Length: 356
Image 1 (cartoon, helix red, strand yellow):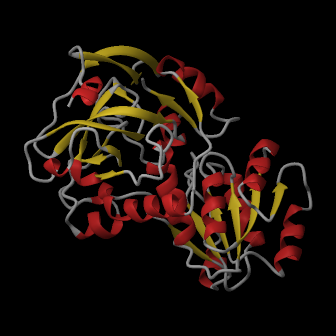
Image 2 (image 1 turned 90 degrees about the vertical axis):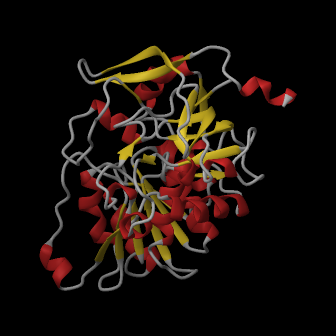
């Protein structure tokens, strides 16, 4: 145990970045270090990364985002090292020093059909909570996570940089894979930033031809570096839709929208191959989407969503990432700099806090 002594807390409290709904602000608070319940493991956080969903706490939205505990530690993407385990059999499968990643759903059964095939949010128990929203999340030094939603990292993945894979990675992987394309078919990745740059990597690893679309040249450069065959700035290139149709011979076979832009959704059907193509919904705009019912009824294109993370579809995404060297491009900060990260969210790719 000698070399693992650094994992143990040296005091009973820790620093946490907490959102307070009373004034819609973030505070660096000192909070108690939790103790694991029988089904939990206590993890020393190695890296917690910032996701657009975290920012939705600060924004008006009508997409069903619910805040529970207040103030609440934000963050729902993280990796870390096991410090101790609860007394239950599922928790004791882990040992001190294990590098782990996890997803944020807790207090669900993980066994009902909804948990296994839909999403933990719709658990039959009706008691599901999400760490980072309804319970304390991961922008703190230690966290207790459900052992059933936790996995040991493949050795190819670095515990200090793999955090985005446990939300962004799982989301991007299944957003791409669930389109069901064959190698050689065309896929549009809409939004090439924090999620999309991973989507491009997954799509290329699966053998697809990829067109990256964004309104930021920096994100498009990232898409090219990740292997995109063509990229277009849909704001500055007025002929982007025509060019996509020409390149693909009539439209892409699937368009995966990773953005929170309603306009991006409105513009996408024009580049989808009529009668065969798919619009994959991943990004969540503030406003509800508007789809042309006649287009859907006549089969002009199909619409589908992708499950963005359960303990059942987490492992395939992580193992694929390790096998194909899929890595998030992550800029690292200190916990105290989280407000700065939030300010940069619109213009910078994935960002994370690394804990000592």
